[in-house]
Image (cartoon, rainbow, N blue to C red; front, side, top):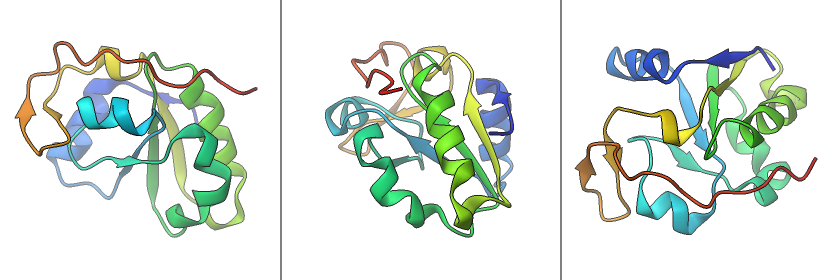
Length: 124
């Protein structure tokens, strides 16, 4: 893992169109209730089996409810051969610290208020 990144920096990168993959490790239900626009849902229990989907990414940011489980997810992603050259960071504070737009499962985009969630506990 290459450290943590602030939600504000993630928002800036996305606004600038940077080549960054935001990986939300929360449950599918939590993801559907609200997530960072453009993020992909790879629930923590599925991460080891799906990490190859992230191969070739230049920069990866992991997101969880409060910024704790995403640290372990970022470490796991960074250890995978196909992502070893990528910059892999955990978003500090998790989705509860995100103040940017939130997209729901129906595609609606709203303010981030109320985006709290029941995401995964770290299995480590």
